[in-house]
Length: 158
Image (tube, rainbow, N blue to C red; front, side, top):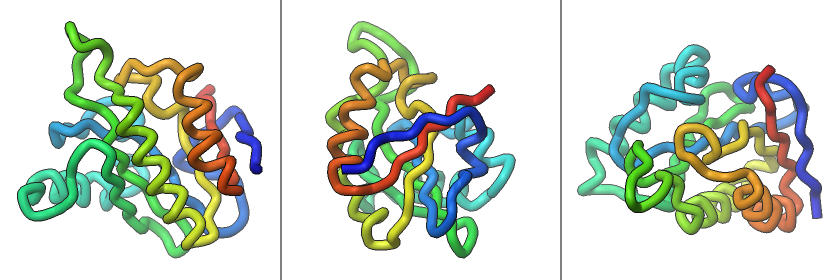
């Protein structure tokens, strides 16, 4: 089992050797315009374009809560667009994060990471605009990725 490592820094600039996957949470509305996605878009245009196309063509693909889209942005870096958030606002149904969907995303992500022999890099996913709590997210990350020997680095911006 690999343990999760937390570092200060920018998750869009992963500090590791070898193949890397940058993971983040997306909503199920096709919206891309606030939070960590802005940092991704400043560095690479492909993840946003791919996500918007994936959402637009959702009647003919797997776009849904719990789905993951892997987008290659460099020879050794992919961005994982993970649909783990229902809508964008906190309301009577609670925060937009859907922990069950996030768990499905991370289990699929583990398969991609193992296939590409990649480490995973992320901010505290689901805990910004999605309204999740890291105390709930971290154990999901540990089981889905760490228990499958996928190295995970969490970046605290600052």
